[in-house]
Length: 130
Image (cartoon, rainbow, N blue to C red; front, side, top):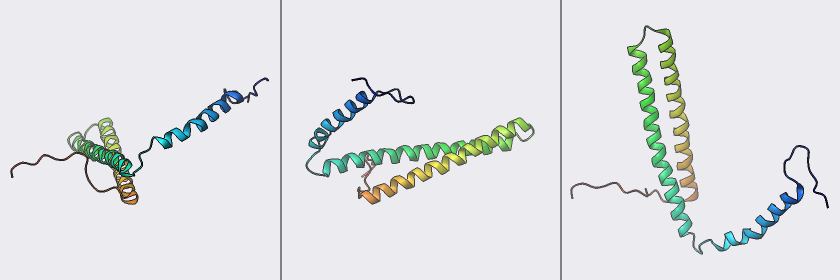
């Protein structure tokens, strides 16, 4: 039997079907690998969302610093039109970064609330004193 070949696709039909058959045959093993309780999944989800929240907070801080650097550059170098254009570009990318990262932070917070993940950070801050 000759494989059917589409002119726009590099895959032949039998190879594509072999992939689908293999994926369908191996899918039940992924279900069997799941823990019987949802506690393990909740812990994993909590760790992933907590780490991404911390990462986004760090990136928001960097975006605010980038915006501040653009403001400082714009104030101190107001005579050269090319450097003013560069400073405005830095300001624009700072604002875009703040907007995108704030949106991601809101989406992650919504997912944490919707899924029901408790608001616990996977990394505990050190405590000084008593």
